[in-house]
Amino acid sequence: MSEQIITEFDVAATMRDGVVLRANIFRPADEGSYPVALTRTPYGKDYATVTPFLDATRLARAGYIVVIQDTRGRFRSEGEWVAQRNEAEDGYDTVEWAAKLPGSNGKVGMSGASYFGYTQYAAARLQPPSLKALVPSITWADMRDGTTWRGGALELGLFAGWSISTVALDTVLKQVKDAPPAQKFGAVVALVNEINRLRTEGYFSLPLKDFEPFKKLGLSLQQLQELIEHANEREYYAPISPYEHYDKIQVPTLSVGGWYDIFTQGTLQNFTAFRTEGSTPEARQARLVMGPWSHVNYSNTVGEQDFGFAAQMALMNMQTDLTGLTQRWFDYWLKGVETGITKEPPVKLFIMGENVWRDEQEWPLARTQYTPYYLHTSSLLSTEKPGSETIDQYRYDPSDPTPTLGGNILMNALFAPGVKDQRTIEARPDVISYTSEPLTQDTEVTGRIVVKLWASSDAPDTDFVARLVDVHPDGFARNLADGIIRARYRNGEKPELMKPGQVYEFTIDLWSTANLFKAGHSIRLDITSSCFPRWDRNLNTGAAFGTDFEPRVAQQIIYHDAEHPSQVVLPIIPR
Image (cartoon, rainbow, N blue to C red; front, top):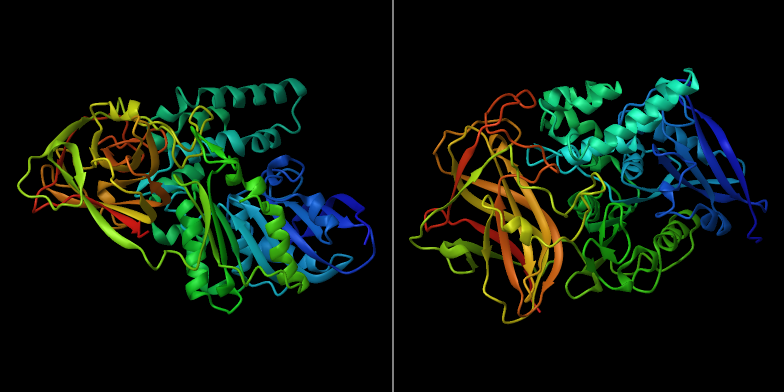
């Protein structure tokens, strides 16, 4: 077969309601029958956003018809853009349209990352007959767990940054498409100015329901106000949360994620559900790859840490890249070629600290020993249970919130994701650090991390944030995982305010990591009450969410005695 390809631009596909969506198509020049590799993206089919995850030219030269489509209301496609809400029906229609393209063998696989990872799940739950395999990368499971909310707090940094910096340009240009050039230029300038002001001013806008940057740009406040009105409600987010539809997804998935990604736990949750409870034998053939990456960085250097050349997505473990892995997956499921991929261990993990790739048979690892490390007086963290110990306390002022520094974020570029030395944060008076003695042997922590925190506040509502840190012998404090709980959601989705001064147990989900704490290093747990602007500030008033604008200071007390054994439960992997 020749490696020459033919490219077609703006190929029209008509949806069930008559709306036309357009795609670019890359196909082998030779006549023949080929499977289709489909990607549906809101970020522009003519731009490079797809490239890190799929080399369309390379896949077409390998014998695939590659289709990259603008989703409804975006760029060259018709219709109205409403995030997430039309992707199931449009996905189904596009899969079946693609299966009938000239030269197609009738089998379609979908691939893509983040939002266009979600478009795969949305299409698959309607079970289009021609869809045979998925490769969803860095994609959520539950909209309330890292996409719009986390522990009941708004993912402000992600939501505002994505809305203004990522998707607003196309929206703004369409608003002024018939305007004179000077007006168009002015609209773009206004958008750029709001992007520039987001870090210093925009994130601080109050009240949230009237988010000032949106108003200045003429962007609709409807979606934000709906999010606020339905804060943390399962029913509202169910149609756009893949985990609500696992039983309807019948095709095999190859999931790819990163330990510093904004959807780390969603990627793991999706894989585990399909692998253990998939509704078909094909769905139970799910595979997982987890690297040390963040959402927009797939190299070996993530933040302030170089994990070694073999860590990068471009040449994972010196063996393959994501396009090569996708081709092996599609070759098996769409071409019937025995590539060996289903005979390999289903899980490939990058173990940070040790900086090696390792194959596993399941997630979570069956040999995990869940071990509580307890908080103690004198800021000590140890496996010994607490006795009679004194409290710790700090003052949380929403006007001076603890700032975001690294982690699983996607925000304004000055808030870089990944590894950041936490010592400047830990020096603040509103952060309490609990640190183990230097370890006498290597200790691997791979799995989900949960904090059980006993605390009280003099406010009717407040937040608690916990962060797991690997402290190096030279003092470098490498953040691994963190989480937040909004007090009013401590018992679930129904809000319940606190009684000031009453002691409560809070469960804080730090998601998952895979890290080797080397001998000589220490394990640290940081406790504070904000991580702004990643998560919106709790103003401590107890007012209806998004309506308050006058912050009050809260006095926070942390308990760690025999009656209130505050702890972090670590998934220790024996060696």
